[in-house]
Amino acid sequence: MKNPITVSVTGAAGQIGYALLFRIASGAMFGPDQPVALRLIEIEAALPALEGVVMELDDCAFPLLAGVTTTADLDEGFRGANWALLVGSVPRGPGMERNDLLGINGQIFTGQGEAIGRSAADDVRVVVVGNPCNTNCLIAMRHAAGVPSERFFAMTRLDENRAKSQLAAKAGVHSSDVTNMCIWGNHSSTQYPDFYSAKIQGKPVTEVIDDMAWLKDTFIPAVQQRGAAIIKARGASSAASAANGVVDTVRSLCTPTAAGDWFSVAVCSRGEYGIEAGLIASMPIRTEDGKSWSVVEGVELSEYSREKIDASVAELQGERDAVKHLL
Ligand SMILES: NC(=O)C1=CN([C@@H]2O[C@H](COP(=O)(O)OP(=O)(O)OC[C@H]3O[C@@H](n4cnc5c(N)ncnc54)[C@H](O)[C@@H]3O)[C@@H](O)[C@H]2O)C=CC1
Ligand SMILES: O=C([O-])CC(=O)C(=O)O
Image (tube, rainbow, N blue to C red; front, side):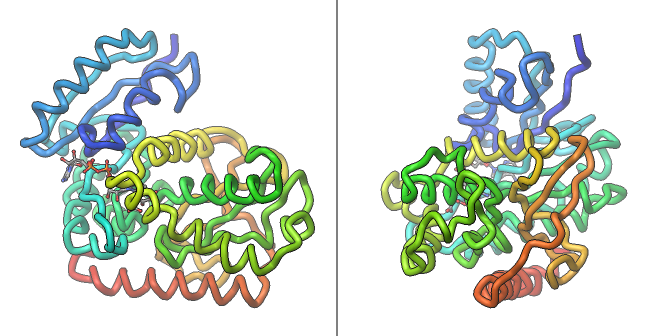
């Protein structure tokens, strides 16, 4: 039997938490022979509800679940964490943009970053989901003393999956036929789902979907606005698909990437593709060994792509400037 991987999850009693914990405990995140220990973090007021979730985890009798801890204490919650999944934070409601949450949620990530620096395992990797996730990730990274910047990620995988699904439906193929789908920039309505470099059954999307007006004027806004459309329809923000995005993000970071492909996650830029170093921006990422990762080099950017990426990066710069007092 392998040693358990310790996974800390904040906001564990929330909507995404409810969809995520059972997937982790069932083996969907780390595979069918990898035990996991969960450390669940909530604010005091939500601890009673979290106990109910733990009762349900118990009632699943998951063979891979090696233990569950619940706490409102950040050091206790991140103790020994190999993965810290930062979900806890307020979701937006109808009519809001994700960065309207910066003032409400930003400060959560200072204390969490500090506690990760003090208490997590030496190999901790951090995935920020709580919105606005890129800038919250930046805040956490800046406060996590001793944790290298390449261990911080913000989630754009749900956007990637949405984009694949939209392109597949238009082309009449399965979403698994869509590869090389990069979301660039911010997890926001300025994100750029790069249809120019994506492929369908190995061919450029623009060859298979010969409809530039649809790609530019329907596809891109549909992906950018999908979160808002879900909020409008469901009355609450995406939860099951977001949890699925977290599972996919961690799996992709832990599993060698298929030859020629890449996946989307926001990482700390080192200046790749002219994106200001130090910003948490989504880019095309590969891992060869399931541990270290790299930004895929040489993706060709049309003038259109360049403009879209620059606009999203400008938004990230604005968000960073708005939280200067937290950095
Ligand atoms: N990056 C992405 O693709 C996506 C991000 N999100 C974001 O994920 C976040 C969570 O969404 P939901 O689970 O639907 O919200 P929710 O409101 O159902 O749950 C959030 C939970 O976080 C807890 N919480 C609040 N402050 C906390 C703190 N300081 N420490 C620990 N826990 C804390 C709350 O008590 C609550 O149980 C939101 O910010 C939402 O916008 C949602 C979907 C996709
Ligand atoms: O749109 C929202 O506020 C929630 C979210 O991040 C998403 O669904 O992508």
